[in-house]
Image (cartoon, one colour):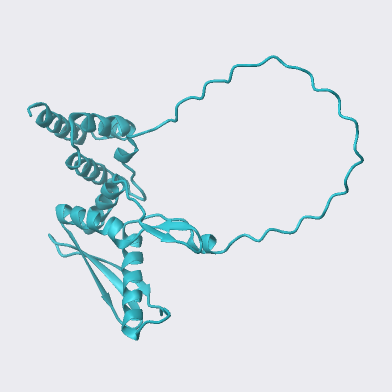
Length: 238
């Protein structure tokens, strides 16, 4: 598996984890991800898949090097350096703030972690003053008609889909790499299962992908089906 395949598998594994935003901007009124919200999950996934991420800085830019520990191939993500001017702080504290921001944004870029547009959230919308409308002359109000009381309609319970976390998405792949990405992503999902029901949910959510694999590449589909059966049996034996 190349470093690109491993990184894609890591992204799929991370999207199956429910991340919570602990950062809050009181001025603009929005929540955001801090490093501690996602970095421990990424490190655990990287350790299991066989990736290592190292961040370095110089005057012009910061970079994140993601290395495949098996074959040594590398993906490098860079970001231009900027300054932080925090009130009442020393220069070394401003430098620490810049490096913390760079680490956060580099990891979010590498793992495709999506947040709202901070620029839009920071700029409050200015409402245009409304022109006063002329007041109409008062008219005698007719007596309201008495209508029979109707029973309120029942409100349906909210729909909740707990299986979205098992959805496998393959983005920008060729026909040759599509098979490997599906197989690798399915194996990663199986490693994250905690019950036989999780195994069934993975197959059920991604049934369309697996049916396509069965139609075009039956040998790989049989191999994948064996993995699902073994994983399901491992829970039923306990």
